[in-house]
Structures are given as C-alpha cells and as structure tokens.
Length: 277
Image (cartoon, rainbow, N blue to C red; front, side, top):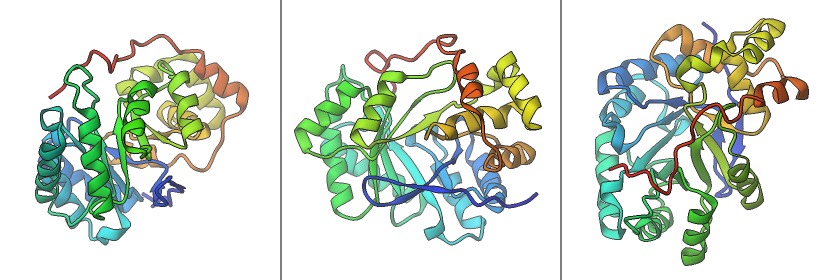
C-alpha cells in the first residue's frame, strides 16, 4: 500500500490543515490505537476525535505508536455539551490534553451549540483564551448554523476557523456553505459516505465505473472538488488505503451535478433542537 501526500488548506488562523482526515467516531480506544499507525503509514495526518467519543486515550496511543513526529499530525478534539460554560470548558480542555497525553491541540471544536442551554457563547470565550494561550493552533465549531456563528462572533469578534457539519450528496447544506465561503470558514464534513449506503446510488456507481474508482472514492472526490474536507472513518486497512487515494483524478461539473441531485434524500440533523451531552 502506497503512502499518499495529502494537500493542505490554510485556515484563517494561518495554520495549514490536511484536506482529508481520519474520523474516529464509534472507534474504541483499542481500535484507534491500532488503526492510527496503519493510517499514518498510508499518509493520514489529520485525526479527528472528541471527548464524547471516549477514545481520546486510544487516539493518543495511536499517534505515539505511529512513529510519526507529533508536529506532523493535525489533531482535533471537541468539547462535550456537559462541559459548556467558561470555567468548565477550560477544565475540559485540560482533561482532553491529559487523555491524549499531548502538550497542545491543532484544532479544538465546540461539538454542538446546544442553544437551549444558552452557554455556547461563554464556551467560545473560553476557546478564544485557549487559542491566545497557544494551547491550540486553531479553534472552531461543529454543527453550528450561521445564526449560531453570528452570535459568537458578535460577542467575541473571533470567527471560527472551521465548522464541521453533516454534509454529503444527500445533505448539501447550501446555506451553510455560502455563509462559510463569505466568512472564510473551512468546512469539514462528518459522515461523508453516509455510512456506506450512499454508494449504491446510480449516479455514484456510474461515475465510479467511468473513472475506474470505487464508489466511496468518487463520493470523497465530490467533497474535495468543492473545497469540502471529508473525515471518513474506517479501521479496515484496505478501506483506509482507498479512502486516501483520491487525489489522482477529477470529476467533471456534470458528474458533480449528477451526484448532487441526491440532495434531500437524507434527513438533516437540526442543531437547534439536538441535545447531546
């Protein structure tokens, strides 16, 4: 299996972030500790975890076992809903670093806005302090709508470098994409492959056949062609290799449009009503 050199995007904070990363949602500590060294050999350098995933220890172990210098990795984690609020966020960040056994993060995200709790702006103020203290190189949000972002910017003057959202050919999120482009926010996408069931769609299969690629590779390329940064998850070595091998072909505008025609065939999660601890 060959190693792939993943291109990077420069965030608004001036930090370079890989254009594709490894998601770890549903991985156990043991899964992460064993999968990350394999992924690193294939060229993965961005690893996405969260306190909610309960695998930060395994992620840290996997990074150390990989043999790749820490500074070559781009490690992301997220604060849980139960730790919203200024002081609790600062404490939660310390706990995340301790579990990962790292001195700093590359990106720290608010996992969900939880607007009914009304604490995400205070949480963001803690994030700006963490950034100012040099303990993370970038800060961002996850599952935030434009209205949520407008509020935290109004209260702090600090625009998130990243918003990680549900986005795939079935949930295109046009409003959030337009807003992110206006604000200079990079968009990461969770569940980019719809956990696999998207891959049987005719538009995806036919495009894959034309390019001699797998349906999963075509869907990931659909993200990349539009400046979206996917975070596919797998612990299988062959799938890890295939998911990163997507930088040697391109989709035509017609192919992108055909795949985008699947929009609306999956329910979008509503961040205004989702309550996640």
